[in-house]
Length: 549
Image 1: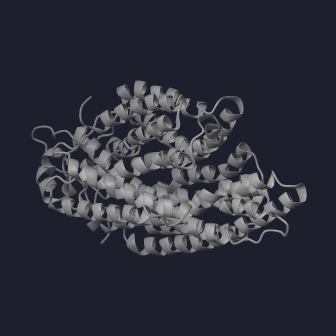
Image 2: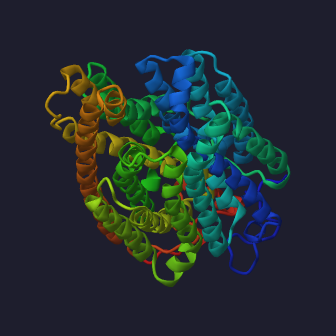
Image 3: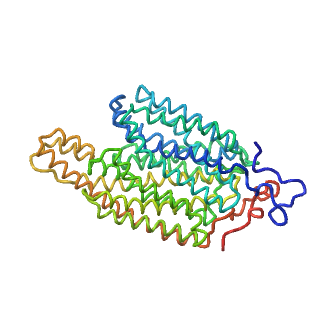
């Protein structure tokens, strides 16, 4: 399969004027290739949400300690966050198709290892290695879309489908997981990865074209290590502080992480072939889109993190029922994602992104009125609005990020977007989690409930549900009601703060995305790339400018 970043035909003039560049022609089979790429996105979305449902069953079988259980739940996201930029840059160098297919094979094999793990240590190792493989998938898929679709309108639709499948995977995970756990053992939630990966590899090897940076330079291993240590250190510190409060290891982890990130940035500025071109952030559209993504996820993560607990431990719904209640969010996101490019071209990028974020912010503000007996229709309506707003915002920002960079750096740029997502989620859970925890733990238990039972109930809402079931009926009911009321009050407060963050993100997007349009790269290529642009058929001359200054 030929590389799309190929040399132009002999005698062809660089750029678009007067000649049809081979790289600008519609690629046959691009929609079939897209259908294969979104399988990986769907799978990552499912895998991110399905494990939470399986944790009680896994705990009963493997008997992990409290610390081991936390690592089983967190190590996957830690490793993915730490390696996204490195893997995106690696795909730019060795070929994004190659990295995607190797990662897909590894992800499938490691899913089998996780499904049949016989000890907590084996499960932790399997999830960590799944994180390594998972880090190859998301940046590769988005970067390949950048190189498959040269027409800006087609690319917007393709990115909308990409985002819609990511949303669908996140929503399908709880529903699918609830069904599997009702009929099979906990390992089945990992084995569902296999048929998807087999299809991806078998069909993708034939229909996905290879793409890479034709002159990438070496893959800088010290930068890879600094990125990994920095992101993992920061994410670990904020997540652990949210869940367990300040411990002796959290401060050093945060300091080491921040120091590594500072050294990473300084090193990128001195390298001839950096792992991440920091000059990308000079482009206002790119920086504005990344910041909007980070703030949006920071604000929404609280709702996502606590909503499942509210549905299952306050409203006492089954996992399957809770998953179905959350489904309207995915439906709204899918519909908005598919329409986002069309709407952004007829209105404006900043209006669609800022408007989408404002809708999410107002929906979160509506969550402040949520209580234990809030009806299904009201919850579904709020979640549908959240999905619509997020679908518009995330799809357009992803398009802006890809359109703002030379396509040789599409993998690294895609990884920046995904890393912003991971950091936003970690910061949101840490900040909002600490607020919810502090409010929840202050509830007043009914008179007569033993002190140890009260302490166990204050540790978590799950602990309150478990403890209440072991007390006499009247004491248990009173303790559970007090805990549930405190949790709802805490979530209402977190929702109010999240609403402020999202409305602030809407204002920031309105100013930072001023004049931004969807289209080909408007970012000025760095000097080394500008010199190579006539040969590669890329750069500002070939790509044109679609940003109004």
